[in-house]
Image (cartoon, rainbow, N blue to C red; front, side, top):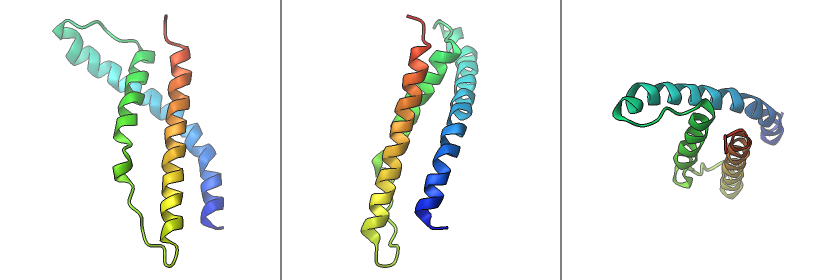
Length: 107
């Protein structure tokens, strides 16, 4: 099976795993917020808000500077384009998950 086929097969798995991972990040952030920030006088945050903050933090961690182009034999440009497309897909997935969470936030 070639790399493209493996990537196409992996995308649904990443989407399915993205929601539980973002929930876990939100639960952890909510607990940390309650333990360390609320005692300082800030208001507690809901799980939906914690997931949103976690997604925003993930957005800033996904900088393009982390992309490294490997020399795949005689196709370094193809490898670089593939990594940029992958990064773009991850940004779009992050944006989509953030948009879904935003729909559930109280007005």
